[in-house]
Length: 295
Length: 66
Image (tube, rainbow over all chains, first blue to last red; front, side, top):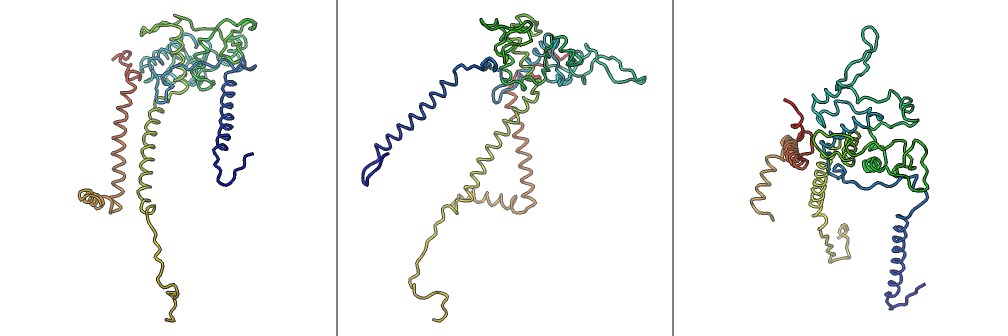
């Protein structure tokens, strides 16, 4: 405990306290960072952390590449729709986003839909319209589980918002299939994927080089195919993203400008008050009160 | 304290737009409308240039049959 006497300076005290504080903060930062990248027992259960992929729509003012959405829907239709549903997306949602009105209509007409009772009370089959949803591969969850060894392929309408890690996680998952490391046993029917929490995923790898042929001639490598389908799934989960970013940029611009204007106006109206001087002129004659009428 | 031109411009603005409540209100609404149209037009032009080639409108010519 340091005591100071009158007249002595505090340099030694301040230096000692500063050194103590710096040691505490410095060692705290060091230990925190050493621990942050350390291995721990629960890592497999949490899944490998995905890398930060440069999807353009991830930037603060970034928007979708709609050509990629179009290719991604083609991939979804040809590869993923065999097992995964996309219940919240309708054929009409694609119009003006990735397909023209005629194209969407033509695609919808390739599918059969059951429609409501006719005048005789019978349900009937008809070709698809723009108002119909993207068709489900299985009628219900039980049928999906029965066809996939008890595992339910989740609906993909909101998958990029529903999974921690978003587009990075989905991309890493789809490209991350690898042989299980030594000592790790994967049950029969499951596949090893380090990005999947637990490591054992029921879905096998489905995206390989050349599994889809693109109409616009884009090279169909596995990474390109995955990038396109993930962009499509991101659009399906966040179709408002383009407008949201545009409106957000306008709002940020307007609000910051208005705030600066408001600050200036406040200081302008207040400057007379803040710079006024109040002067007290002491009276020459302290004796008599000015309210004394006796004089 | 301010120059003569600024003072006469201020006086003109006050007398014409701010003195009567009816003209003041019209000025506020009118300025808002004009600013809104101008800001949105200019910003949308900038945004469209920034996102050129990525929107549906930019790629639809490859697919639309007329």
